[in-house]
Image (cartoon, rainbow, N blue to C red; front, side):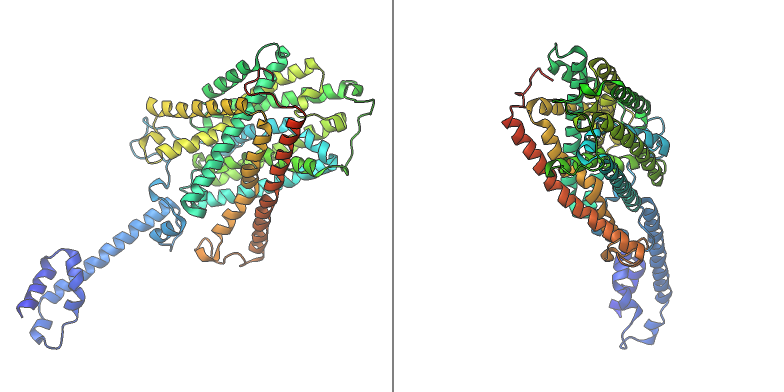
Length: 534
């Protein structure tokens, strides 16, 4: 009886976990106990405790539901289970969102509408790819070039659509590396993060070399081109001071305007000049619908050129965290790719019809020197600004990696700004050294792009869709798996095809680049590192 009384006392006075430990014992007394114990007043107390437990459980459930809303976890899912399965990090569910009291001290990142976003990402897309796209028509023919361009427009849009869906399913994702972590854990984060960095550095170096070539056209190579490369890198780094995508709107408008003017000048110049200027051994200019004599290396080069032209898909998951309404980014992608389709088709087709088998890359060099100078004067703006947008993707990855759980991520302080500029200047410094140090840089960029852009445009999105709709992760968002409807069966097949395309294009592109390196050394094409020539 004393033991029973002590337990009853504990049930009324002990902490809740201890009372819970003995609750089963207290609510199911043994037959040896007297009826007086079973009917003791402590029964009311025990019922009160159980009611309190239920109340606390309901409160906890409400807290979890609120957490679900913040994280984007779908109703009915267990937050901890989702965190374990998908490797979510709840503390960064909405890293760019302003909290109470942040006004005036923090930058508002979520201020990007779909039109602004479309203009800024178009700035990156319609840049160097426009200058080299006519060579795709030369390799594949007029009809072949149009078909290839249209096909990859559709593929790139579908991939971007899947990425937007993935962002809505996993709101904590700030870039493609986070998506890689959801798919494959920490190693997925590291591998995709490395791809972002290498691709951004490669684009930075490519734009430095293109800018150096443009300025060298002005002075006909009379000055050492290394100085021009330093100038391009420095100007690009300074203009990258703004951490938010919305801060690049003005530069993006200027960039798009300038590349359109440069293309118009080149098309008019190519159409009005004497075709004999391009002829070699008196063989007249001619173009074909389909190039039946194309080699494997040329065909692969044309396809990879199309893939690289739509490689801005790497930036999709980096833009989405700053959108006011992430789902509206689909309109941004439609705006960008509609503009790309028109510009690439017109510029590529017109210049190929004028240059035929002699169409060079970049196409701005196919006109007489004075017109080439005028074209490059406008294209130089695009070369610098579009490079800024491309490099910002890699810089934002570094910045969010360093300050994801810090107040500096959205801080408006000088400390945060200097940290951002340090990342930018470091990236351009490394890009300058790589561009000048490696004689076969263009071929190296092709290899890097085959390992990165090919997957960001095709295969990566296929993996994202398969993960979201896997039967093993059935939720209210995904109730049927891959084959629950004809639409899902079609999307499953498309996802598999996208992955297989990446698996095929990657080695073929690397083969083409390696062959170019071997041929370049055989022909004495490559200069020594840090050469003054352009």
